[in-house]
Amino acid sequence: MSSFVWALAAFVLLHLGASVAGLRDRLVALVGVGAYRIGFSLATIALMVWMIHSFGAARGDPFDPINEMLWAPPDWGRWAAYILTAFGFVLIASGLITPNVTRVGGEKGLAAGLEARGIVRVTRHPFLWGVALWAAAHLLVNGERFAPMLFGALGVMALLGTRSIDRKTAKLNPEGWEKFAAQTSNMPFAAIAQGRNQLALNELVPGVAAGLVLFAIIGFFHAAFTGAPAF
View 1 (tube, helix red, strand yellow):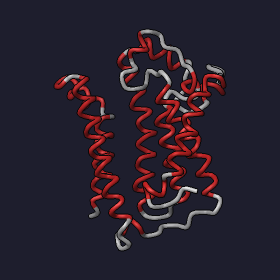
View 2 (cartoon, rainbow, N blue to C red):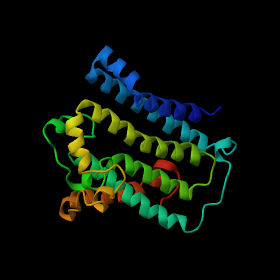
View 3 (cartoon, rainbow, N blue to C red):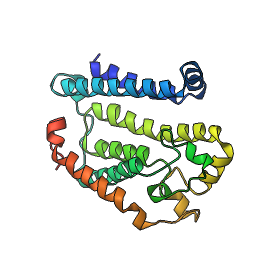
View 4 (cartoon, one colour):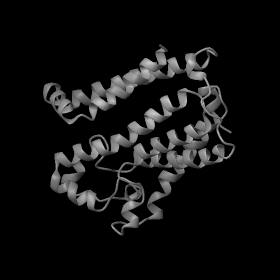
């Protein structure tokens, strides 16, 4: 079996294991929350390096089964992919620069009564939804066997992660979470559509700018990273 398959399986299992509340709680109790987060981050980085390296090797081998075509991507898929990817990068960049109780270490904001601002008005999980949109975009333009394996797995894992984070954060501070959840939504724009929050365009400007710059940079170097041009 391809090394890429093993790397991807290990990456998915690591994150699925982290979503199991009982297992995570036992590990945190054993080593402490700081050591757990450091260990988890290092394991994630190591598996990502393995996955990227093995994926590149598999893609370079024309006889590797992961390169077999499963379907022919539609012509309109490329333009839809550009839009989804750009929006995904805006969500990712905004999620990285906007204070949010669902970020690592951000749960302290529950006790402080942190209100939703910027992209958090749109979704309380901007980074993970950005990853999901990025994955969906790549499914539109890649018909090889590896597409549902890689992009499908990462997209589903990101969406499952939003629910797992909600459960863990609510458990830490039920009262604070109730107030925060009342003004936010997991599904993008749901809280705004339901009248529980409102869009503040001026608060979105930094994240939109950062996301579009990231989109342009990665698009420019896409061929160097993956061997296939983005545009």
